[in-house]
Image 1 (cartoon, rainbow over the protein chains, first blue to last red):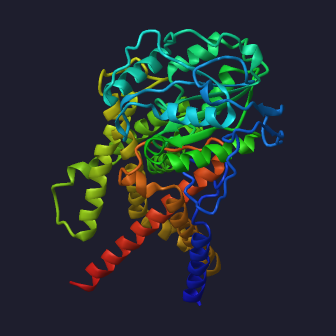
Image 2 (cartoon, each protein chain N blue to C red):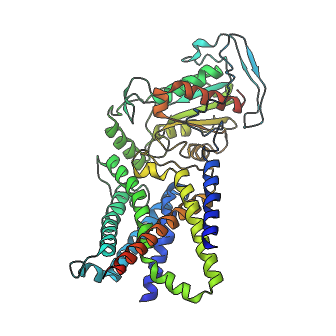
Image 3 (tube, one colour):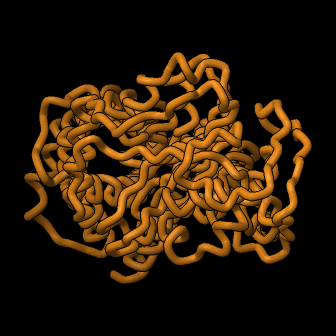
Length: 256
Length: 219
């Protein structure tokens, strides 16, 4: 009798194991690698036609987003044709598990967002770039900044926040947190960000979104925070097709 | 004295899944709990100091070798772990720092966290015989079967949890940064890790049982 009970329990558990193979993240915001080929993705925003996307009630983004026709060269201009902005911080040089890169992981994801949404862009560049180009040294500097609760200065700023209703904010995960330079940005612009929809995205090596949304919310209490996206750095460098798919699906669910 | 010893052991067992939760329950709480665990560990060794003096005495059979190996690993681990943690501290002991080695400390602390977790669970399983025997003698057959079945089911769920949480990847250093889903239920996380503890403890229990049986059928 005992043996039958145990066999029965093992059968049930094995069935549970089989049924619970893939994570329940398919197609949702925090997924990192969507390599599931069953998902068909309608990529919007890459056509030349103007596209109006209806607002979808999945997120805090309450407005319809209109993409105007000729958006290709918007990446480095804050020319004010969009009500969406992408703010990001990204490092090149030797990074984790990707060797020496000349285009940052976060920058790659940021550009995919910009391409999809036609948003304006603002890259956070340190005022004085003392960040080391070797990974280990960079992590030590980042840890020191974290310990010191530093607020490194960055160059320039977004000239006019009032035209933006949705702001994507992205950075690599440094010691489980936003890089301290991001907090400089949050604090400098706390008043301007009131009432906006802020949507975080991260690049990481296993930490996922690492609480970027919670920390963003704490830093900008009067803004609403959208569902964030986490992309593994190695995928951003080496598997851009699947990353683009993830980004497009995420943006679609957000109403873009 | 016996009661204190038991209390310390129970507290350490309870702290373990909480520590594994790291930032899910708060990084500062993690540091406080870590210091508590370190203090309990010291107390545990003071109480059991005779074990250390007896190491070189007597005969070593399979069971004793297994126990000694696990204990020695844990002793080393329970020095390295709080040490690396304190040197990386962001809250409680943030003044204690060491320049230039934080990335190495992080690798040590994270890898040892998962190995230590498995080893502590194994250690628990190796030592649970006395308690389980005492409990069994107090239960009638029906309750005993239910309790045994419950532990077995939890252990089987622990296999699923082990796979789902990707603990193998952390142990083999295939993933170098711990992933925490802040939107998930913390109870779920703690239950999953407790189930893995039960799984590993059960494995240890049965391995030790097997070794004892083998050594008993010889002279």
